[in-house]
Image (tube, rainbow, N blue to C red; front, side, top):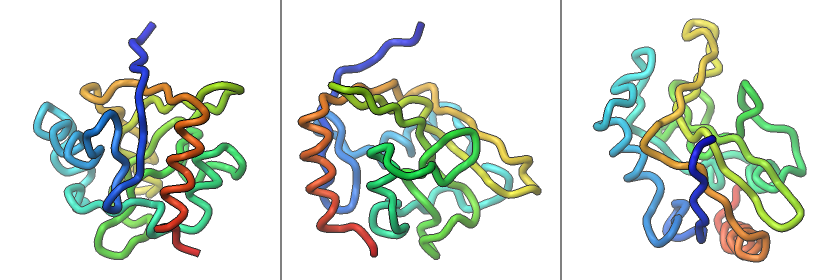
Length: 148
């Protein structure tokens, strides 16, 4: 069984902030620590938060809408150039429970046929468990940035 980190989440300055640290740099560190440097030839170093680029992201992160990626994943980051689903994406499994929300298997995802629609979880990023009250506060913070 994998370790689950009890965590606090916020949405600040266009990024997910978990336990006081922005998630985007942790993903970049995951690349340096042995994640795919270039997932299928796409520009994997240029990401934008799905909250600011894709409608219904927050509804997906609440488990209210169907996930937008393969393998039951929800996008956290999309293409930083176009804000769309081209190239490499960062996805997460979201499980919503009565008192908590769990994010697991954060990693690189591609929906393109050329890349055989695969997901590679970053081993350097743990599974996070957020208390439901904190998670609802995070959602309210993120709503200020949400694209319509």
